[in-house]
Image (tube, rainbow, N blue to C red):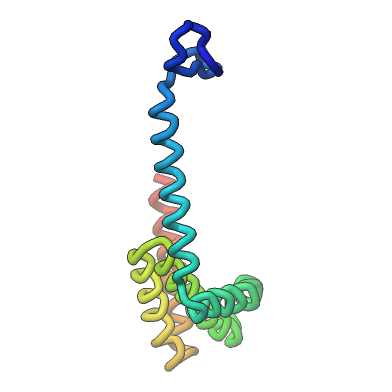
Length: 144
């Protein structure tokens, strides 16, 4: 809103402090450049990566409910494997759009999935025991 002081060089926001139009234009330009960057990154990401994120999302959606519902059966090791691979695919897609740092969780998730795919029963029970130990240690630390 125009400040009404006669010079026309500033705008007054509802809080009462004045903002020069140049700063408003600079802010709009910065937001537009950031939005343009993300849009071009999204469009430059190949069709294969978009296919990968859809496949990863489907793996996560299809197996997460089974993984949470049947936590100790043999079928849950397959659900855990599928969730790890789906999460890795989603992180790989995010690395193409948001930055290289998303490759780290993608590689970690695949690294965790490889032993699970080779020896499912023993590795799955080890993963479950490790997760239980971590949760119990966290509970003890919070309760202190």
